[in-house]
Length: 121
Image (cartoon, rainbow, N blue to C red):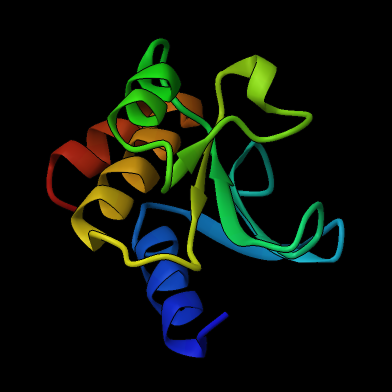
């Protein structure tokens, strides 16, 4: 994985109100405060691909995968809960990645933090 891609993903995640990062299952992962988790890196952890997995609102996983199955997939373990996987070893539209990260955060964050996000924080 390119260090620049990880830096870009990290910046998107940590720009959200009270988002934190720590290692989970040997990979960088992002949380709202100490929990819940909203995204995680999967650097060849489960296959030979570099990707990240993110929480998603109902229906979003199916929409992304149908839109571009070369970039998006149903990840193991958390895919049954609606999480979306994003391959980072293919060319990316980082606006899509930013949307997915924000949706992931909104999916798990408390209303008070979502209000702060909506207020432009």
